[in-house]
Image 1: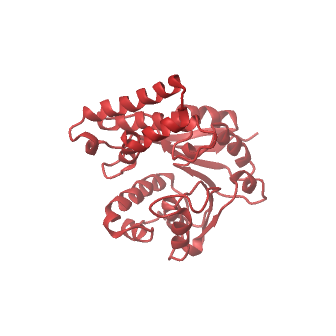
Image 2 (image 1 turned 30 degrees about the horizontal axis):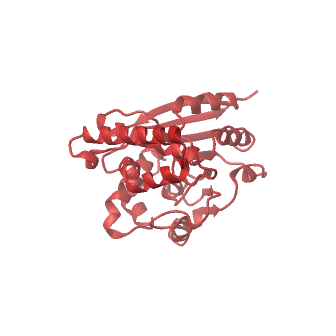
Image 3 (image 1 turned 120 degrees about the horizontal axis):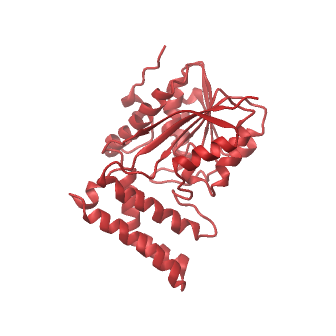
Length: 290
């Protein structure tokens, strides 16, 4: 029987300030729409890699029901995140009605996948771009082979179905280019790989694409706005100066990327308030047997 999701209840179970409820609700609804398409069966055991503050974790917990379980593994510092840290958000979820269905682990996903635990699904939901390098995904996919027969991946697509989403694509490339120059990267976008790249890597590591789809985000999803605001803000300029120092060529590349975001925003009705998120890609992969 298909799971029924109470989006309002799920959003209320996620740590947030009341004035931001509509924004959080849109984030949860986006995740519900994708998880519903996956058809995760009640009673399933799910491993989520890179849950962050747990917005998809609670949706997965709703999908697996009382007899299922979600293990959410993230190596990030529990003090990371704003306005609430990962530690605060995860603790809030654990103490809520879905808490018994969830285990949050602050550990290296590679180490966890080397354990003898098996899962019905392994999920990467908007977590691949956080990886420190592209090779991280290929390594994790290899480690998934003995642990599950199905991998579910969702990530931004680097494609814009409308002009309003173009600034988000450009901002993502600007963020990644800046983070690539840092000795240690802690930004939200460290490895902005494309769906084609993910499919190629998956095929090369023993996984076959079963289905895929592209989702055009609703306007209430603010991911695009957040990333664009960060690039056109003064903080980005300060980081460019700190990272590039006297390297004129590196600085010029980053400033050109920032200028392209500003130019794309100027062409929109409403300016930066008219920005919307780029398309989102999701793929279902099955382990190649034999």
